Image 1 (cartoon, rainbow, N blue to C red):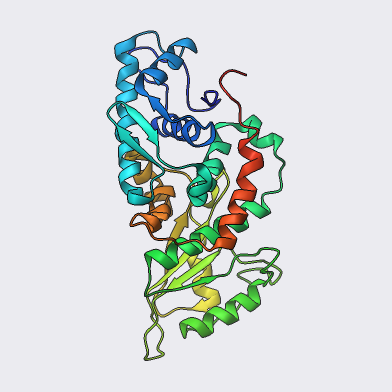
Image 2 (image 1 turned 135 degrees about the horizontal axis):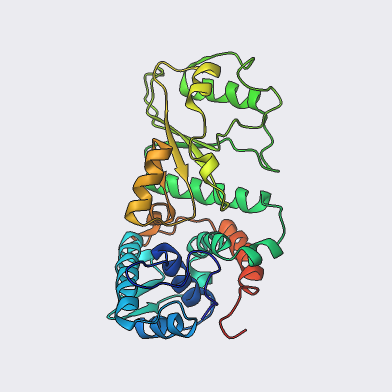
Length: 312
């Protein structure tokens, strides 16, 4: 199995668990997906937690394992047929290789960067490519999840270098809204003012006031500062919306119930965590193009090869 993460798992003694359920779940999932083992049992996790001196008391450590199993079951149910693992009693079992679930593997690898900072730091600090790929995954997921909506990608990338003025002009036309003024609200040299994707439900009357989501995609581990973006107050000035759009936030992280509620409150809009995005394939739909699948596998492969193994 992979080495225990450096963040989110610390020595725990009654009555306090100093282990985060989401971290333990990601570690178990990543071990199953990236370390090529067929299953992980509750006893396996128990042994490692004791060997690493995270827990001394077996019954206390089983409390955490039971919580982890409940969260893994929730995640698997969210992914439906598209889940690359299943729960079989006290085991989590791999049912397909990581290459066969490229969007899942990509998002899980992104999440691991938060729990393995040394590993992530050794891979470099250029996050442009991962951000571009995560936007493409989010677009593909939204196209599957919202089939009657139009999905328009606005975020800056090497293959999409529109500046804010061109983006505003384009969006005003698509949404039939009146264009406002860029100055003094935003620099004309800005890229996209925190806006990566626009989702809207068109009608044939060609009138404004369309159901609209402004989506921020955050692929990195430092998402707290982005939860309130894009700034809808700012966008209300540069496009004179009759009714302000709603905000949405997409992330490769998977949240427990309590953390999901906290982040939802910060976003003040629709939160799309890993489970919600990957629900695009819960009915077995093949929602990624062959080209995107290949790009995701190419990005993931050299990174998982460098993940820290437990016996190293």
